[in-house]
Every structure is written in structure tokens, then in C-alpha cells.
Image (cartoon, rainbow, N blue to C red; front, side, top):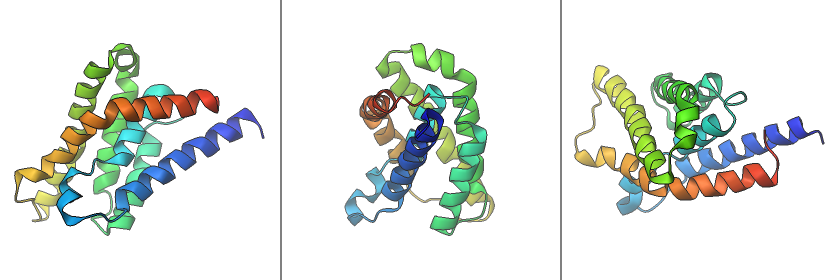
Length: 161
């Protein structure tokens, strides 16, 4: 298998795992604390290999999430495209940050993602009612260092470039 094909397979597998983790049902009490695994994975790959994962990947992942969630077609696609664009645009700076600063940057990116989704939901009359809507961004910031280490290890082990 060529290195490019192997890299493409690893990227697809990591996004597929993230999608499954996003839609996997869990206990009702834990629902507000589940981070957006797809957004975290997208942010990592946009930072690591911006020439392979970019706005088009974000849009495609968003459309898949829209279909899986049965939400308004394009709301997650817009949000994922915007965070992919920002991440690719700022990837040299983000890669140089220490992990704690990367985690804060990830918090901002995840908040932008959720802000876009809530804005679209509000426009159609389905705004969330509680502050718990924002907890996945905070949880995403907390788990970012581990996501980064795991995906970096996968990228190095399988030589994704």
C-alpha cells in the first residue's frame, strides 16, 4: 500500500471513529459532557496536515453529521467548515503553542462551532434553553491534550503526511 493511500485510510478511520463516538448513545446524565469528537479530530488533522484536511473535509463531515442527527441540512457543515478554515489559517501559530495554550485555542474554536450551530437553531426557532449547551466546549478543552497525544502517535506510527 502506498504511503498516500495508507495516510488517506488512517484519516478516514479516525474520522469514522470520531463520528461513531459522537452518535454513540450514553447515559442521560453524561449527555451534556460529551465533547464534539468530530470537531476535535478535525482540528487536530487541520493542524497536523493542512494540505490534506481542510475546509472541504470539514464541510463533508458536517453534512454527514447533519444527516445522522436529522438536523437542518448545512448547519453542522457551516460550523465545521468555519473551524477548519480558522484552524488551517492559523495552524503555524497553533502548532507552536504549548499544550495549555492549544487547549484554550481549541476552546475558542469549539465555542465558535457551537455558536454557529445555536445561531442557526435560533433562526429556525430551536434555541437551547440552558447553559449546559456550552459544557461540551469546556470538556473538549480538557480532553484536548490527550486527543493531541493519541492522534500525534497515530500520525507518527502510520507516517501520515
